[in-house]
View 1: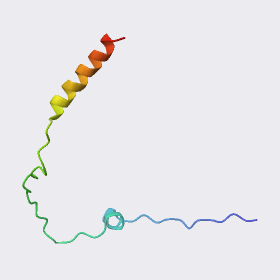
View 2: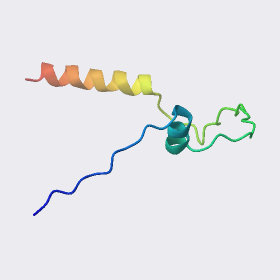
View 3: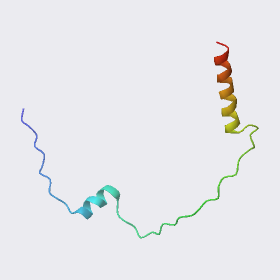
View 4: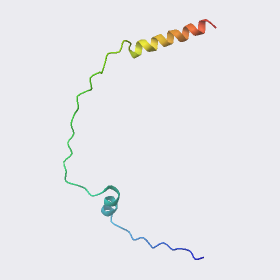
Length: 66
């Protein structure tokens, strides 16, 4: 069984390679807009910090009972 030979590749210009990988450049203008921060959906009865402190105190209490 004979080996299949690949055709030799010819060099292409950098611009052509870029266009093949990333597409053609367009003249469209990109606009950057700033969004307002999202408002909270609802108020939580506990904060992250108070939750962390409560967890730490439970861990410390667990160690004392051993």
